[in-house]
Length: 364
Image (cartoon, rainbow, N blue to C red; front, side):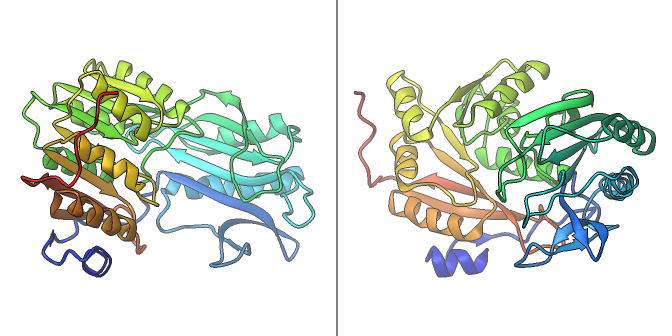
């Protein structure tokens, strides 16, 4: 992060704090998605070797929750015994493409997702009974059908084969329903550290209006709502907004409103309606924000911007843009969200200077 902010962002004066490490840096991932295939006549389930689609058979991934490792071992064994063929990328033949595991670390609830190339799942009932018997905490078995010749893992059709459609996990005081397709941070404990840091940088007193851009399923939004007067979450993915609204109701958080749409379009509309955010929190995809989005933030003239990012390079680029527009990065707090990898999440506090480089939004 220091290298990115100085070399890419050209902002050598920004304070980058020591990284907040994880108390549990092993067996932490609550979500696993491994390809299934054949190698030397044997069924293999595991990770792709770097830069290839050669599957490295994996019995005990040291960063996966142990239940996810149990799922891998059980699925490998049972599909072999039942004669359910793995999918072959080269020929397009076979059934099982990927196996996914999701674990509610606070609840112990487990979901198994089988990604198949066809609607047909041979030996379906026998497979279900075997998983039910041997996977501790299992409450959901889901089939995702992906018949396309593609690298995308999940298909458009999702069917619950047994049990519930979702599992439940907790972040802080909040409970979240997680479906097969839901986004949820893979490191539950460190996600709570990150979100608490975002709330800290937001500097809320209980009187503020906050906009949470790219809010996803509303995890950060609910954390902010504990200490703000009103929080608006904006997200272009409609299923995520549906989940966010359900999460707000389930956690009895009334001072949030979730809006479907593109931030570039929604925020000027909110401005026209008289909404003036004191704080904007943004947690964009790895590619960061388009310049028009950053300019929209600036034109709304919040006192603070809190930028959460999983990509130091795109973050540094965006911080340089915001700096040129009158919002200066004061401090950066890295969080080790993904121990044993080079990836890092960062939370940045930006404050408005006296002079802005853009005129306020016009009310059209």
